[in-house]
Image 1 (cartoon, rainbow, N blue to C red):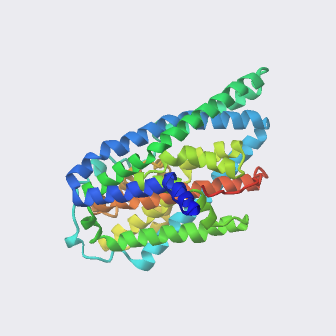
Image 2 (spheres, one colour; image 1 turned 135 degrees about the vertical axis):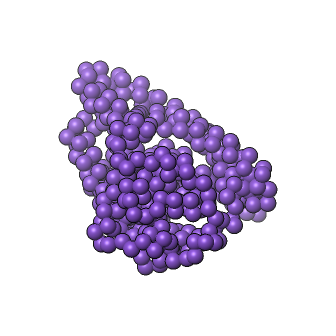
Image 3 (tube, helix red, strand yellow; image 1 turned 90 degrees about the vertical axis):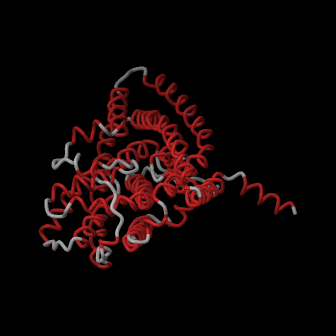
Length: 406
């Protein structure tokens, strides 16, 4: 009897359990009462905005403490270069996988006359043919904080009273993470609000006409996670299943909110507890949120081929290579924020000048439902990246109790 009570207590006091319950309740409300479901948008948005308050301080403190504590600026540069090379290789591989899957399964071979047409004018009229690194930087808060923190950390290395400042920053870091822990108790509310709004606004009916595309996207994402990322982790003797179990609470938050940003601080914290060094986590994860978007890369490349198939537009091998090249640049503009991948897709289609950009109207209804797959893949991909760089730099210390599944 005591064992049953103990198990029941552990389950009912577990954040993962309540986030899952909240997601189910949100789906039910959105489906059976769409009007009230849409009103829950403010609840989901408020939670995301609340967590975003912590992202800047956590990235800044983690990076400054990591760089200043490391002391070796050459090592900082080496980690940065290795990270960017790894990001480019893996995201390019994701782009190719997305295109290959689309050509094999052919999700665009359907009758578009029966598809729901949404208003895509706000995307098609505002697209730019040229990618601007300045616009990318100015609109990317995470990247801005990352660069400021790196500069501050480097300068701090040369300051005589470095230890005193580091002690203060370390204490502030503990305070911020403690406060975040309490805020995360609100995660079920955020997941409930976001899911209720999504289902209430778009409805499951929109999934049927484009079901083939949805299934293709989710299958391809799963293959990428378990085969590609799983193989990378297996090389370092880590199980992808164990890693996913370790991050189950954060993954449910990502699923419920359709964004990987609310789980960023917890991901950094858990990677450190797992054995990755603070300096590597601080450099790799925030940078990865801007440059290592595996799920977004798969979705973008697959969507381009889907629309080409939908409009019966033949693409030569050279044009496919051009698409990959364009997406290698434009995909960097989708910094893990809900809906940003769709905007990048619009700008990429505009630059190609062959596939009708008006075709985006067919994707609007299901784009929201595919953002979960993108966000989850991006999230896991960045976690794997931090492990790879930590292992490669010998900055991974096996903890006494690795990946405890609380």
